[in-house]
Length: 379
Image (cartoon, rainbow, N blue to C red; front, side, top):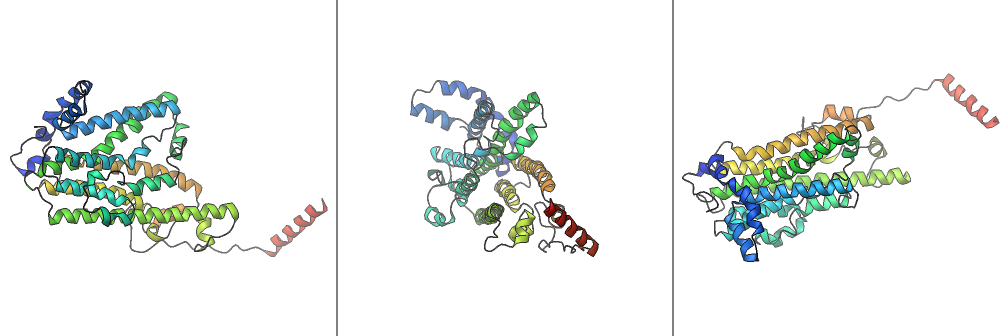
């Protein structure tokens, strides 16, 4: 059996029992794949391999692919293209593996299904009772669409922050950074915060095979978080579109105030309470999945939270870099930082634009300006 037969539900969160004995499969998997001669052989390898080991193998392989492609075209945003798709594929992988091994899978289907909420909200009811692993084409459509409309899938598109960092890092150091952090760390991170908690829940189905009320509660929380992320992304997209149009033709679009556009950054809607409400929702979604795994395994905390913790640390670092750049671009941003929390709201009060003191122009200054204009005319 590719997963252990557990004695207690808490055992589903025991690393020494649920993963450590299967690590040798990680080294054996490449040679087994080389011996595959048919689809039947491939299926046998798949069902006989621990699902967490096969998922980890896939993340390592993706790391190699990302590294090679990024070094060939010198574009280091390759892994960004995976963020909106790969985590859900790992969830689907867990559900599919359970199906093929005739294990209880309804809870895993529900976990995979939450990814569907990233798609267009109007498709949710239509697909609600379809097996999540059969509809992977629509999984994560919200994130994928949002990334696409920003130009993320355009040839040559790259995160602007990498361009800034590259200027400050020597060539060899940048290559090492690309190998370790950009390519492999992020690829394994995508696996860690999605597949690992799902694996714990898969094992817990030995004791609780069917969906419970608590499962539906966790699912509902994730739906709410996805909805808030959708709203905040939409608000930001609408504002940035209006701002760039205003900069282009000097006309204030309907529904916007000139002062808001001149400010350069969004401070209304969800952004009046959090400087990055979409980032807060994104981190919370995967933290809730970890909490779901804790509940399923009847543990207060367990090792499957390593991915969610690493994700939160990554957002702390990347958001710090983003804000360091933003603060240098917009004068009012420091005041915004004082009033509004980075992720978690500081208060229930929305952001208040500081009152600007009117500029006092003395009569003598007006006279000097008039004289200067007169001299310029004479020239």
